[in-house]
Image (cartoon, rainbow, N blue to C red; front, side, top):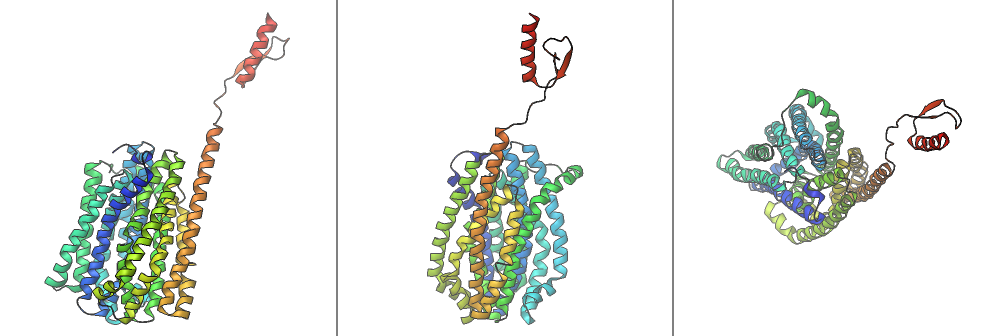
Length: 489
């Protein structure tokens, strides 16, 4: 697929196709995580559900690193395809994949060693701490392969093949769904069995994604150390801010978890349910942030700024309609969710608050997802980093702290929602201003193209002189040559 498919046709159709196909795969994985928690809840121990909550917070850190690197893959590949430079796209694809594997291998090794200390920082103690340690010690080593899998999906979306990327994540979801009950109940492995099933799912996603990117699209070029060293700078320019951007979110969530933990494991169990329900309910919005990146990247590469702006417009409309619909469904389904996961009264209060009030605020999270996708694909990845870090620090810590102090566990959720709203609005406004600025700069550069090299032309030193001087102004030379001809006559 060598043509840039997003530079023509309906923007909304591209957004809908890319988001829906991406969402089906992502939601399948998120749904399996939710099923994980459901199966664990059937074991009838609140501490196991709380352990999933703590482990999920740290697992979010590892996944966020892989997401940050995949942002670089999508941006660089889609931009190269938009510029009709397929060989450059192949070169970026292999080099981003190698970079991601090396970086995440180092990070997973460090994190595996410090898992107990990190969980204690979140507030895990006793049996809950031990359960979470055993779960993460199995899951964390698979991070490098998760990163490869996500990069293959990002490469596929970069060339516009969202369906193949969807098939890879659907395969992972199916593998996890099959082996979850087998390991948890049939083999009696409990929480560790859930971790093993997740590891197998990650390898399944990688296998299908690699087949699509390498075998079907011939998108993975040959690795050359010299090219890799040259490409490190553009890769890090996007992946670095992308990683920091995505790590900021779990950092904020980790602080929220630690604040909730002071009120007891019952509330943490409820927070764990919210953490699994949220991505299933809003999977389409999570998918949108990755889906519109290639659309923006290809149109930016082709200098079609009106289509870049249209992508922002249509994406925001989509977010508003989808979030309001999903929030309404959650409000009606809150009793069913509470009954399914068997959380106590404390956990139920957290779930109800989320379904009744907090879910609507995801409109602003979606707005920031869209803005971040535009920053990353327009060459201003540092903007998304600053805004995400700001949201996870200034937009989270003071609001959550004061919320917990004044209103208890419910205040924690209200505080987080308030910070999300403020930073979401700010990010969207900056995104529109950035597109306008880039377009103005491009128009100025093309309105005054660089002057062509000037040719030396011999002209008379004066109208009455036979001596000649060489000038480098063709227009003046033409005038003088005419004068010279008239005078000589």
